[in-house]
Image (tube, rainbow, N blue to C red; front, side, top):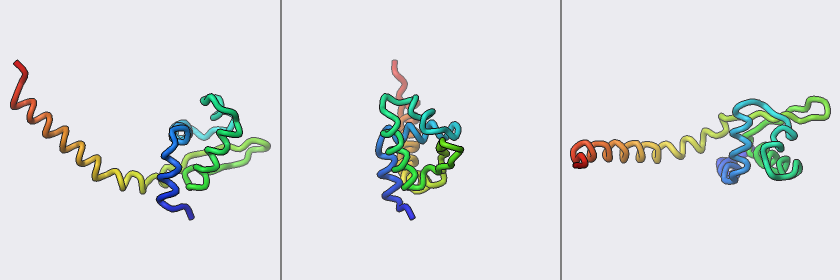
Length: 106
């Protein structure tokens, strides 16, 4: 069973985050995904393996092709960890707005 650390490690890479973005739109084959990158198909497959091992994507065989789909629920630990920071920035922006409202620029 993948751990929360596995999920964080998987999304630490910008190529893997882009793969997740692409797969969130629709399930895709390795070849279709590889078309979005300046890397060879085996490199894309390696990134997909990391995502699969972290439980972030699933793989389905369709003949000779493998189709991947995202499992966004596995990102829940990341979202849960980020929630306090999201609240911090929301409060900071609210305070900034209040300051600017009290001190309009001449």
